[in-house]
Length: 338
Image (cartoon, rainbow, N blue to C red; front, side, top):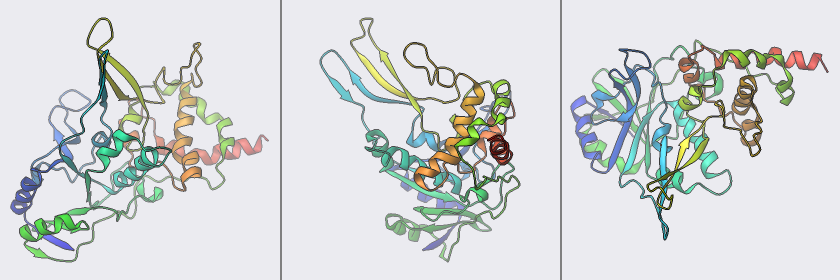
């Protein structure tokens, strides 16, 4: 069922929901940009609709809500281990279609890829997703080519309209609140982009032979292995473990899992000092092929959702979408050399 709400009524509804949920959405962080005196749009807790940024893409994804950058798993002493408490409130997350498709990828990795991850699952079970309609594409987006521009598996959707906001609700638990605050009921279809400025073409004959193409060597010198592309990506799931000791004897402390990156030094180090991917070009190859080849072979759809954040964040102006478009010529090269 669809509803139209004015700004005041939506804020009243959000105030009511905040008693039970933490509400996260893209918002402005003044002075929080990557350069001096610049602002940033990223996910944070909001209280009113006025704080939600609808006309700009969040530089970082929703991922930190489900996968905190640093997450304490348990505390330990000499005598006992205590699991960290789960959040006392659920969460409502406002996100775009590409990011909602990203949730599907995270679920696959953490819930269906073998035994489910306990810490992810207990957060995931208490999260409500509100789809933010996209009236237009941003410059670096290529969601249409990745098939992630449209979503229908949301709890609610929200779009701005002339008189305020229009919402579509698929979750019975919010119907009562929406009926209470709505100006009117109406049929609502969330906005979705149908074309993007950035386009990508994944070759139909793409295979693991592409690993032998020369295109990866370009990134040996261009990439500085900072890992930013992984940290802004809504579908990167890698982490490392850290033990934090409270005492000098190491007998009391906590264990945390912390985001990690396949692009940074040390990630593939093994016992004896070996490193499976010491060159940055090899790391780029691993990342790209994971996003557009091997994940699809296992699950039937690409891991990349086409949000374009990796293109936006790279300090060396390496374009992931451009790298995808080089794969066609790379396949021609390796097939010609057979």
